[in-house]
Length: 368
Image 1: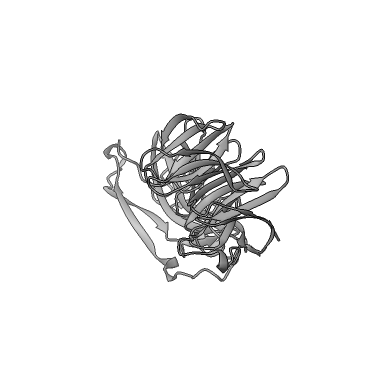
Image 2: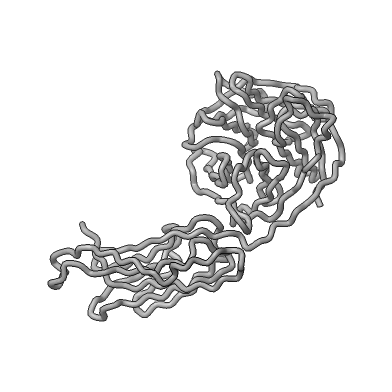
């Protein structure tokens, strides 16, 4: 069935609260898209124009309000309803025109947004879409750290994942053919239990969910579920993106893929139920790596930096950056020492632990 397109003017008016984003001189330009009508309703016209006013810019701050104004260009055409949608989710609808609506972007998560007008008439629909990006309206804090205690760490461990449970650290290491899952007495660095990851798979992050350890791999598109007590493999699952870091809030799993995206997985079936796009006030935050869920936020190592991003789970906004520059002294570095990677949290005592790939030390820190 062909789509029925009505002549509509879809106008975007916005009110910027920032000077950080560049204005676009194309705000007055319009694009006409002609669609052939169903012959039974053409009324002797072969084509009708469907006009959308282009956004003045593609990037917005999430505190901005966008005014949407819609009217029929020809009054003799009727319709059943008109919907305004964001990412295919209806925000509001109307059965009469003219239509004026302010979209309050503060209620939306950040990231790329598909915005649509959908017109329904006699069981048919016509739709026009455009895409914008919403940046965070939060200026991230820059937080520093204080080392509370220092512990030994296996200098050969290419740390990819870390979590704390009942007095022990559980650690995942990477590299093809060398990837392991470990239980560690962190006070001494002693490896109490170890399991070698299957074949040549490059092991990545780990998370504890309902007394089971869930581990992902880098480019194999597979993950594993183990019994926590004996590392017995219980299940294998697949996903369609790279695996870097993983954590959980006790309800969902959150998986990073090295970009600015965090995939939200249902922990029983491992099906994807959402994506969190991570932005600060200037840009998408790329290279998200090891993850840890701490007090309602996701803490994320940013690969090849000495920074940890604190991320609002509901909005994807970066609340703060923790600057860990210089935490591993130069005297403890060798030619094999790699980047900061590994965050663990003891929720009972509020302790935060951090380490890195092939670091000889593990640190308990406080942030301020």
